Amino acid sequence: MKTHRSMFTRCLSAFLLAVLLAAGLAAPAAAAEKFTVAWSIYVGWMPWEYAGSSGILKKWADKYGIEIELVRMDYVPSVEAYVAKQVDAVVMTNMECLNMPAASGIDSTVIIVGDYSNGNDAILTRGLDMKGLKGQTVNLVELTVSHYMLARALEMNGMKESDVTVQNTSDSDIGPIFLADTSQKAVVTWNPIVMEIEQAPGVDKIFTSADIPGEILDMMVVRTEVLQKSPALAKALTGAWYEVMDLMSKRGPAAEAALAAMAEESGATAVEFKAQLKTTAMFYKPQAALDYVTSDEVKEKMNFVRKFSFDHGMLGEGSSSSDAVGISYPDGTVQGSSSNVKMHFDATYVKMAAEGAL
Image 1 (cartoon, rainbow, N blue to C red):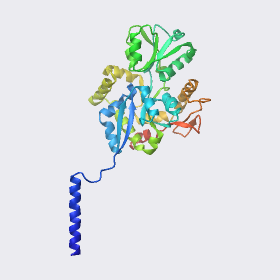
Image 2: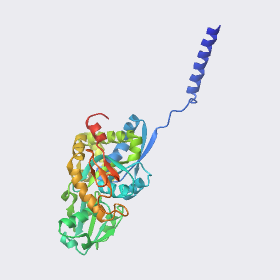
Image 3: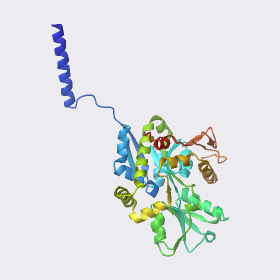
Image 4: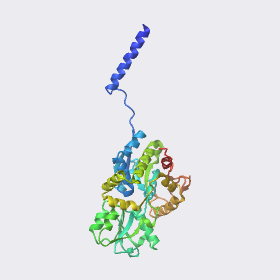
């Protein structure tokens, strides 16, 4: 009798559990971790939008059991949101990473160096050469890579930043304002705005990022505290990125459709978008990115960036030198303060991609 009752109880329990599961009353599964990633319109960052709209990013997020929300923002506000910890990761350049989050005490890790600008950033003028900039007002987004490139261009031509007047203008307004106001003689900006402006009559490019190759890096950056807690975010982002890179680097209808979608989202035609890609040194293969981020060249270029940032008071209040903020590299070396390392170049995830380990 005891055995009969035991069997009956087990059968009844199994039946009740099945009913509960069918009714959706069983204990809910643990909610997936959610992360927010900000991006802004730029040729080297459009693959992120495509990764999101195509479902590629979701596929990789699902693989690692997380959720990733992509949020489009204007560039500077996106970095400000990252500094305010309103987003977990953001696309930004190497200079902004050093002088906005790092200088604000936000510890950041570069997980992907996607490309470097090789002509996408430009100084455009109406009837002026570099020497002719002296005494002129130059419109740009202040304290961004546009400002940095202007300073480098002036320095390389024997001039100083004090030789010009910098007029701060938002990235959403800079193109329309320059095109509408023909009294403006000089502007510094990035694509797709550059291509729009240079089509205007009487406008010439007098200096571009191709004149300082490798100095303006376009990167995916994650807050270090988030990365340490949830490396799955970096794995999912890196996996998605290189799947899109692989697609873009091939020929055929799938690649053309992807490029056309990126072009449309950026406000360019497919032809214009491909022209922008030609002035972008994309690291399509993870091994190429790995080779670059582990080279001495990155350290050499970052020295220019550190100097500019310090000279413009962008390394934090009370900074006494360009060494105020430390930058660590994959080989373990540190530029600047080893006790205040706030920017890390981490090759862990791109190395996994190169080895097919994601």
